[in-house]
Structure formats: structure tokens, C-alpha cells
Length: 69
Image 1 (cartoon, rainbow, N blue to C red):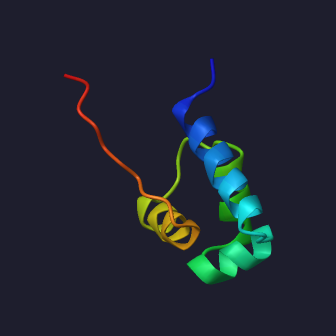
Image 2 (tube, rainbow, N blue to C red):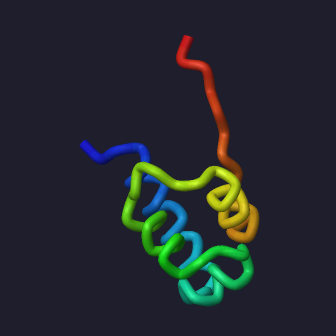
């Protein structure tokens, strides 16, 4: 079973590719490093939330928090 961070990383990667962006281009647009994009796309479990939100904004994605109860 894949972790939630791996799922998030795959979603971000798939969206980046669908938009025709290279990792370098996405990093520039989001104001983060290429290393951050690589870490995100590979499911790193510890990422800065502010940077993650910047990347998701550029990709046109939203992060949603849903109660399990």
C-alpha cells in the first residue's frame, strides 16, 4: 500500500507533466528549489507546508483536509 505522501507526489508529478512543465519550470513558477520538486514527487514525508501549497497553487491543485468521523 502506498503512503499518502507517495500518492500526493504522483498526483503532483502527473499534473506537472499534463501541463507540459519540466521540474525546473515548476520550481521557478512556485518559488521553490528543483530539489523540493524532486522530493515532493518522490513522496518525501517531511516537506514545508508553505512551499507545498505554492507548488499546488501553480499546478491548479488544492489540498483538502477531511474529517474521518
